Length: 455
Image (tube, rainbow, N blue to C red):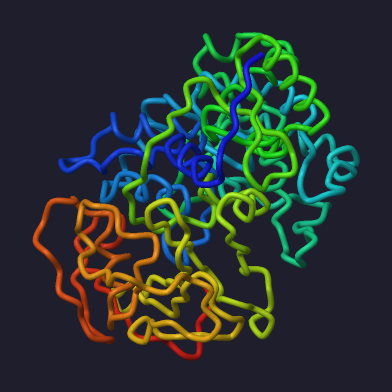
């Protein structure tokens, strides 16, 4: 059993390379091959339809590929059936061949909201009727079903939101594997159909024992992490840590993973034998709050020294940074956080606020006034970042100290690397958007919006 030791800088580069940030973004048209490659490399896409900016799973691809037609992902999942929706990390898109590895998850699925099991038991006749309706009429959305008679129409979850009973029954059938997601309506609502009409038979009939499946999921998690602790790897597919530790010991003993220590990490880690270790990472990219790089917050703190939380469910007066804040990856560091919102009525991308990493709580600044403050813990600047298209990696201690630079960097970074230098723009400048990720005609503004509007 071999062992290697990594500095924290090396661990960051290994982790980012494993997530696809070790190569330039494609300069030509993005096609199905690019989208397919990224999903298989990261293992899964967490689904989240918070629409403040754009649904999160589309953002994950955008961070690695740049502008692309969102229908590419939809075609791969709902038309070509190369991928499927499944509970994995959370609700996720996974390769179809991963579906048999998650059988034990379907068999032990815990319905939501917590306690809904009692409803399913008490109203078993209605639950069976819903499945029969899909069998006879499917695929169906919850709205295609009539309202139930003689039972509650809605239930309340732990956040106090009212949930339609008929939708939650469909979700329960989906969680147990009786139904699968056949498609999405334009408003993102799920279309449910019988699993045998969605999942190809070679995957649906394949039987994988729980231990074998968990070992393979850990292999996939290790490949997607590059390097990670037992807790990191277990979290990727939401595996019990006790199971993960046992199987990781087996994989290490077999030489399929290597044990390692990482500078500053208390717990031992595991590195995938095929993990790349680039000398540098050349990237400038926004990350979705549900990107695999940042979704495990304890790992983000260990790997980047970056305290990141999403504050969607935090009351506005208690928010530290904003409603929908995205980390900004520059090289191998998370250097800033940006509160963005799609202003659909104005057809503009709104930058509500931006902060350098290390800014003090409450030190809210508009992008046009980004400079060092007493609260910044960033190194003293020795260079000024002036060209968002530069293919060279900006120095780690580059300062974002000119009006509009951070906004310009964020908006333009996902484009092709080889283009004309960009001049800095003053606050309030509108920057034309043509990226297919956003509605046609979108523009951006570096002004701060006050008061901030939720959702």
